Image 1 (cartoon, rainbow, N blue to C red):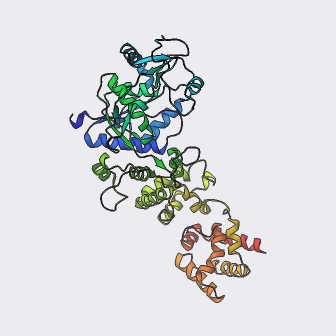
Image 2 (cartoon, rainbow, N blue to C red):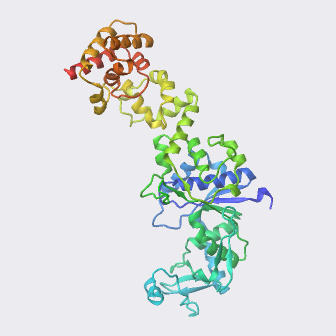
Image 3 (tube, one colour):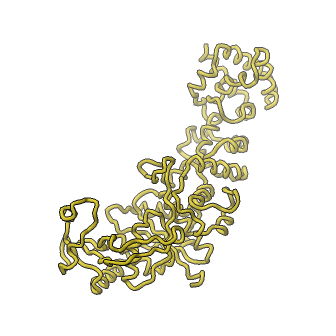
Length: 467
């Protein structure tokens, strides 16, 4: 096989938000295809009609494009439901070869015979020679002896005793194929050479390999990447953990940061590097170097990555990246109150202080709101007994001093020193009065940009409240 014969696939189901585990899987597939000059197929596994929704299909396409995997990067999307004739043909071939049989056993009947709800199917219908009928599922007849060896580029050669693999269902009573069979047939029809997916599918691999062999085809190269776990080393759960790629995007994570971080979940580049150009990742990544141990999806580390990526942007690119949060209807200020020139003036200061783009709003809202949003805890901490006297002095001085950053700073420094206060203590009530918070952009640059009239109005309003 030449490198250009390589064909991988990403096969999500359109049943919900785009999981970060799916994002890691599609990146691994995409990188391997790019390295080899091969092809990645996007296959939408849409045969679960009860759970599929068209918007989830679009969500898959949108998530991939955000990651940088646009339509030109893959073949498809192909839809599993379009391959029903091939699924039916495979079922007929397995029946004709004696590799499958019909079974009308209920789960309760199996439990009654085996005496345990944890034991698999007992083969009761193997030799009953039943024909197709309502309520009769089709089971694959697994070998009674020997073993199935999965050659896995990450896990070596996991070996499964065939006698421990139950005769598993491959088609429902209505004749429709289940995941195990449809997945295999689709991969065969589409010429897939490498199956790269999460470790949770490893128990399916021996069953699917048996199907490949029963259908007379050579199994693909298997790759089962490590599962993603949370800080408690529990498998990521959409009910418990933050796992939706759309949520991270909406919060203001950059695609480059997310892509870089996900590639490191199970793999590491040479040296001590973690943040590196995408082209370097593509050049260095090797499936054989993927660690099989569970990978910790550390949101705090992802956040730090994102902060580094934000700081690496040019100021112009940062301004552009922030626009959805500044000019959207969700912004807390009146649309006409937003001033692009004002934001541009503080953008470089803000860029070093946020880790996700949505944090830009509380960082700059005081510039565009009629009145600042006051953090009451910050007010209580800053507005001590001497605050009113200090603010009154600042108002008097700021009414006439030159409106320039260094002058504003030195003026407040002098007022504080006269009262035995260092600048940090003296500026606390001024900052809360002007911005509503104790932390944020550099104070005196902010005051200069806010302007004399609005700054004095806020300081006087704070005095009124104190009185």
